[in-house]
Length: 307
Image (cartoon, rainbow, N blue to C red; front, side):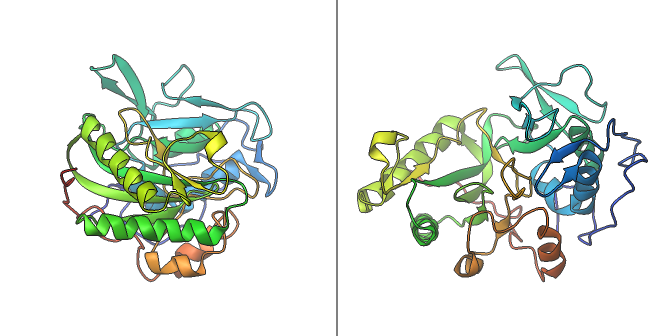
């Protein structure tokens, strides 16, 4: 199976000891004892060891893409902020990609050493563009995020994801699903990188509108709080140049330290909550997988249909 990650084995490796270099290439952690999450307690050293252990799962969706970080220098309980650019103090393993169109230089990494460099900077979440650094003008991943209003049952969120999958299938597109680690689910569409951002946004908008027309009592495609009562917001707005969605297997800065976790569609029937997979149980899940639930996502060469 061809992966974007330079790490070849799918078998988890034993975490490194915290006081020593955290990764190949000598990424060292300052203040490895600093607590980044309190419940469960996760230190910077713990987080580096964790990502070293699940590297083969997180790297394919992270390597070679522009990434926006949620950094929390004093841990999740302290002040946090989003960061898109490399600033003084970043390890050499964290790189920049030059974006001539916007005259910006975005953060990117090319392997485990870079990921652990992000940990060194107390980055707790990783949000990626829907394209690679080699082609910033064409989307290769589209993401729909289901954001339920308070009081909407989890069963309805699951039904929404299935509704979208069926609609996309009618348009000839195969899709994949993951927990967001937040309140809902993400449905992800891999693409041959040929669609420009205007086309990607127009298509995802049209899909969201189709679902709203079919069930206006259940869905809406605008983020107007006054209209959201009892409905699920189909967030298609992540499909624009520079917009991001959380990377698969990234931890989230939320109670319990949940992860954005890829699933097989058949697993939705057993999914109890969007934060079901967390720091303290994801390794058991990964070790028990018989196959990658997103197997084949890189080999799909599907294109956007006409609106």
